[in-house]
Length: 122
Image 1: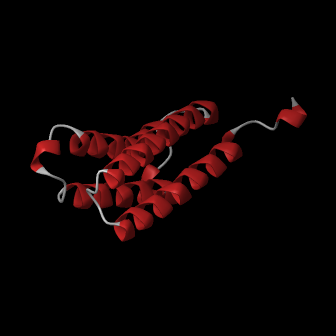
Image 2: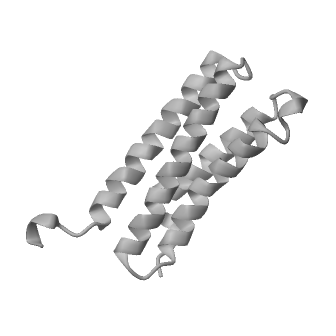
């Protein structure tokens, strides 16, 4: 069993989740059960899937959960774009979190590649 807390990708995912919660606090009240809730749940899913994957015995299973985490990150990115287009957050806030999120997506993808067996040796 791996200690998920030591992974930078998990630490960054938790930071992104906190950023999303802070951002959605400024959304219109009408979005509390809509976009706000969906964004929060998708953000939580990134860190949660990294943690769950770390509990798996095989690297292949861990990689599978990391792929789900990237899917959740893409979901958050899409929802942030929608929120920005609806003027629920400033350009500055949008750019900061999108940049952080895209770096997280790249980092998770890079980590996945380290877990996958070398195809040249197969």
